[in-house]
Image (cartoon, rainbow, N blue to C red; front, side, top):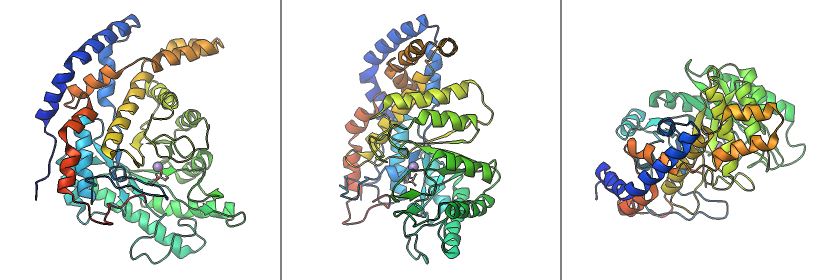
Length: 433
Ligand code: LRH
Ligand code: MN
């Protein structure tokens, strides 16, 4: 049995040598260009180097739709192999040391051993995710008609239990946050009493909130539809915000970019939640129609930039306890999940660095002088600045790959994993679909 293949640091620095010329040339050119704007490129390299985004454990397996799932080679078969792949992503892009687990998909037999296994790969655990939207082995009550808002108090109690168990596991793993997304809703008019369902949600969430350790936060994730196709209990940011206010200072609203109706102004929702002190953070992805869970920045990169423009504005104005949690939440149906997750982490860092290029004094001046075109131009100048060399230098300086995708492909990591992880008919590391 081949031992577990890992990409070596020496291989990465060899790879980086081959990109040295273009990086230095582009970096020097950009440094001159930014100096004309009184911007020190070194500051931006530091910003890029400090940017962090968590990897969803369910993202390293191949995703699918209700129509089909096309398993990829060398799929991770359990949480340890998922962490191996998360370790490889971190080794190459250096901005993803945290992994977000989903329970029971990733329920560890030995959480202490899992924590050590992660630490050996420089990884730690980000927000936990409960799952009361599927039936679980040995479960007494079905979640077919809901969980935390189900009419039957026994089902609600079971769902509360599932969340408290998730928090318990998270405490052993060193996590500091718990994300609650529920599928509860209706497919038919009249199926649910909207007000009673929301009251039951708050009643159940109060019990989960009471089980939170003092230094933890709870993130409520809204979604306007699916799997319920007529009404969803926590359908939008307003309902989520009301609940966060009702629950208390440890409750916040998590924004999954795919959970909004087409053309909704998400950057404005972000500005509201920042202003109200209730922004939990994000599940970053992209979409064209519904909750497509496509790669972040692949469809609407300008929207992603505008969201980071709001986040950087808040960061620079040193808002009290502004500590948004950044996570990816994607489904990789036709690409190598490791490549998509690396590319997405890079695109988030790109939007973050570009948002730090916005001339904020000039923008405020244009806004106060009702000069819309100048305001847009100031944003576009930052958005159209190619910061690729800054991102590459930041990765290289923190031991990562200048060109993560090429380094990954040249390492033949996936091929080696397909030898180590022979596909077992039907056996997939649990996750969506
Ligand atoms: C729901 C969601 C939620 C998860 C799941 C994996 O659409 O975004 O965050 O629990 O995907
Ligand atoms: Mn999500």
